Image (cartoon, rainbow, N blue to C red):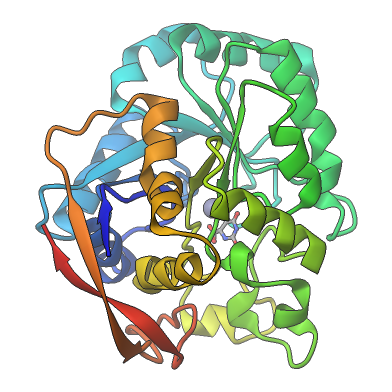
Length: 333
Ligand code: DOR
Ligand code: ZN
């Protein structure tokens, strides 16, 4: 099985020393990745952004990888955005305090306040990536954010709005209602429900934001991915946290999936769909949405050969630690 130019449209790489440990998994096996800006402090200016990009490129030697950099959403003025436009891929909006390192996020979705920056982004064709959760009851947070997505989609029709890591049937349906709404979908949300996280014994390594939801939600997500639906892009949301911050009281949200992504997707699509739709999900849809045109392609070959996912990579516990997977990456060209 071969995949052309896999893209991870939502990735957390952190900074050194974690960066050094996690980045090679993505750099080697993906053609490009959209890099999240929720560092401490967040990526809000050109100096920090360039420095971060350099750190990423130095984490591994593969030249055929493009980090697509993002800025942390703020009330930037148009001049600033004009100057930085060529250095960034998109801007990521977090509601304040909703997840890891998002304290500096947006605390009010009053349209008047958001208008200047969103109009400027529309004008400059800078996509808006959104972590869509409210502060309500945890299982309702994403579906209750739907009204904000609608408000944004209606008021900024020329703005590309990406609903990040969707987990509910509600958002699967919303995606079809507005031309300018797109979505990313993780590997873990194709596989998990809340039952896996805490239905039997609590598994902190499966705790993430947004939390995995109900069976019917997972089914709706699988239906979109496995059918190759054109407005859905793969975004792993691989989000490493050291073991001591996961296996403790006050467990950090995030699943470190980077080491297992392509083998597991191959296994899932082989069982439920086909290779053509995996190619759409992992690359072609995003290439169409963003008009990507890579000078040099990256071809990944996978073979059917069982392997066991390591129990840890340094101080990081990966998704599916200790489990047997059916596919292995054989070659990268
Ligand atoms: O589970 C998550 N982890 N969700 C997020 O939105 C952020 C991420 C992180 O940065 O750890
Ligand atoms: Zn994320």
